[in-house]
Every structure is written in C-alpha cells, then in structure tokens.
Length: 235
Image (cartoon, rainbow, N blue to C red; front, side, top):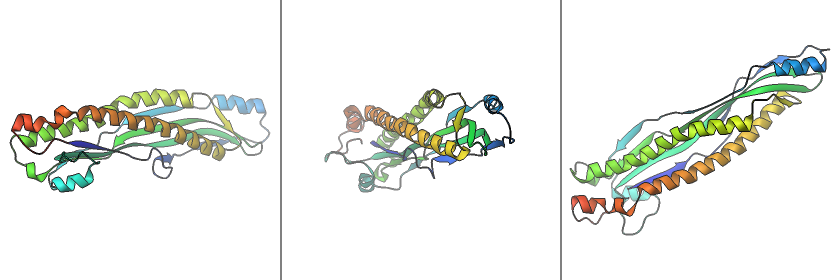
C-alpha cells in the first residue's frame, strides 16, 4: 500500500492567491501630512485567518493491480500495489486591503487582511479489485490506506494555527505604505507568494516523512503474516 503524495503548486496567482475587495478612501486635497498619517493609524486592524477545510474521502475498487502500479510512484520489483491513496495538498489565499489613498501626493496606506484555506483535494482510497470482498485482505488494505488519509487530515489541522502565527509575524499589525494601493497590493502579493512557497515546500517534506512512517516493512509484510502466504506485499 502506498500514499501518492502530490502537492498543488505552492502558489499560482490565478488559482491560489486571489484578489479580495479592497476598500480605499480618498484623501481630500489640501489635507496635511500629519492628518494623513493620523488617519492611516486609525484604519481598522488587519486580520490573519488560516483554516483547514476538510474534504470528502471516497473508496474506489474499479482498478486492478496493474492499473494501480501505473498510478503509484515506482516501487521495488517484488512489491505489487494493492492499495493506493491519492490526494493533492495545498492552499488558496485571499488578500484584501483596508486603505487610504492620496492621489495628488502619490501616497497610500493600508492594513491587510489575509485568509488562507489549507486543504487536500477530495481524497480517493483505491483498493485493487482483486481484493474486493476478501474477508482478510480487504479490511487490512483499507485500514492502512485510511492511515494515510489521517496523515493528510491531521497535518492540515496541525499546521493551520502554526501558519496563522507565522503569517501574523510576517505580515505584521502595522500600517503599510506605498505610492499607490496598486503598488501595495502587488508588493504584498509577491511577498506572500514567496513566503507561502517556502512554507509549502517544508510541508511537502514533512508529509513525505509522515507517510514514510506509515509505509514500514512491517506493514508491507502484514498480508502474509495475517492472511497467509501471498506474493503480494502491501504498498
């Protein structure tokens, strides 16, 4: 049995980092610099929200051993893929700005609001059709694959508050300044893109390690030990 760990690209602007609805107030002409800074300081506080979004899990018995072999990552020649869990792990984020803009002075200020949704794609647990209805092997294969499901789900719930604290420190609570709101939005998007890219790269490595901890040699030999001699080792 084997979990195919496939991560969504950490960030693709069009798909992952979405533009929110910016709320911008125009500064009346002739307003003094001190008034501009005072009004910037009184902007509503920014906000960071990171949530884990559970996704459904389905079971599929339509594929045989050979089909699962083609879907799985390469395995040792003496291993036959009898179960497989497929999912993509990633996120989508939305950036919104509450700000103030002075077109004459080419100055703007804002506090950002960032929302990140962490999720796997809907997960599919495959069991080779040769084992459907097998009273010994089918429940063992399903039990193993659902431990891979638990890795995805548990990690998503675990890193949501961690990422929230990380982004709170990275984005900060202070007022941001730029010549225009468009400049500020583009700059902050680029910063978030790079930061979340690094975070998701670390998540990929951690998920791979946790799935490897499920796929032990003891697990591979479980069918033979529990259900009798078989040429199929658990992947």
